[in-house]
Image (cartoon, rainbow, N blue to C red; front, side):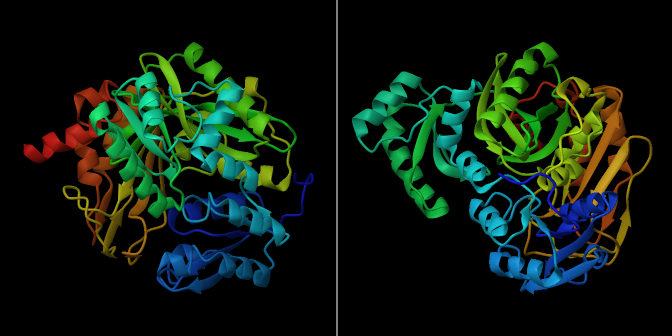
Length: 456
């Protein structure tokens, strides 16, 4: 357990791109100095130069730079940093990195290693949620056995279709849907081998496969003093290959009376496992019921929509919690207002989704009431082929969902990027779709829409 109010003057940001710049701005709001690490591919980026200090820690390949724990810890020591903020992706959910940071006498701006390890193991996470009363997808909270007859019995008890998942999986990987008993054993064998290769463990678990759910999230903040709050809910159902494309808060059509007990259960779960920092509980929602699927123990890409509706600066709160501050708000003070939506702008071909690298030759960012753009790009910025293709997040806020949709349409119309292909044309088309505008979508909707779009 961290001691109350640790000395924190300088934060090293172990990430890149828009989230590095977002953390930098939060640090400046709090009067903190910043150090940003970078690869050789990023060393000339404007956001790198805007930090108080920058350290090049390796070649372009992430494995030799942004995933190089020793290089990052050395950079922290050489620059006199007091804390490391991992952002999202890269090392943000590595229990070993959290532990190594604390062992080096630094503050890890995130959960402790035990919490990351518990929630990173999907079986352990589900067991913890069951114990805390968080609703879970039907299926045992234990590892799938190796005996064939036992596997068949578990699937039969759950009822087909079922889904096989890697205990250490994430990001949509290590999963296989099984429609009937005839394909069960082969599916288990294939998924087990994929899990072993991708995650270093063959451990699997089995759950009921929900056929038309929505993806709902609940954002939590937890300090080290036993205080915890949840900040409303998000809908992240618009996904392609399990990757989110559009997020919004609140989730349309879900009443406060329905969501409130689930939010309270999430907060209780955090207290029971001694969780600290920011976190997100992810659920599938079908036929009026919530089913826990996983917890993300980090800051998420889509945190801005919750910031816009709750009025809470989640990044500043995350840093304050790591320092030992007491949460400055109680649950009854959390009031979410209006509606917010976020579009992820990727440097990808809008038809094939192939990544597009190159130099930004022209850029026009939208503005106006209720419009926010989180981005690190500018004219002359070189979009690298080495990293995730996200180059910007376009966020809007309005008094209701209808107005938020209208503002997003206007903002997308005024967003121009030249030099690389982007997904902006695709998003413009999506926001003209009537079913999406009416909120009548599930996690499979976007895939179907894209197929129909390609066939047209």
